[in-house]
Image (tube, rainbow, N blue to C red; front, side, top):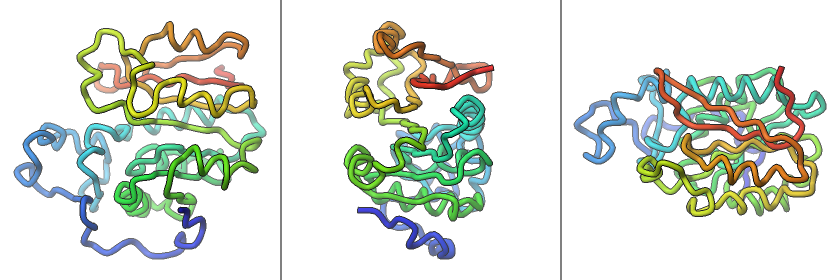
Length: 247
């Protein structure tokens, strides 16, 4: 279900987050298994103290703000000039959507998220950053929404997909098998776009199998893969499929 443009001019949500959305003001309030992420809160959202809302999964799933801003900068610079819309297929609590909405490249950012609580957080967080009214919000399965509600926008859009990776367990693999990524494999993510001339960016684990990505380039031209680092360590990669030009 989408709310389209209907709520974009509302004020910020109430100060009390809904169930399963939290703003932890203290380390000791957090569940023990995610407490380590509290010390990274300002890297995740620099405006955390202004009332950022998070779900528990978002603590290890959201793109850190410096990385999100650099990805947004690269996408804007390398995307074809005729693409004026950015569709964030897995918006989560809004880290990437906020960064894209801060760019002057896009006439509109569309953010899709099937978890209603994460979407509530994303809207609230975008309000804190002053870009909520630059984003159209859609709740539901991204592939269904892309096919049924946003299909007409496809020729004018860049699609950005930061899918769930199946939790932090990927870190234990020397090379991460993208055919086993859950709940969406590499092929699940690319199949809806194959043969349609889409420009798509996939945000993936830093240890992703490069051979599997290279195999997807056959017949579709070059794929650019960029490692994104923070504090001297790689955090993730982005694989750019389509007509991106890096200068």
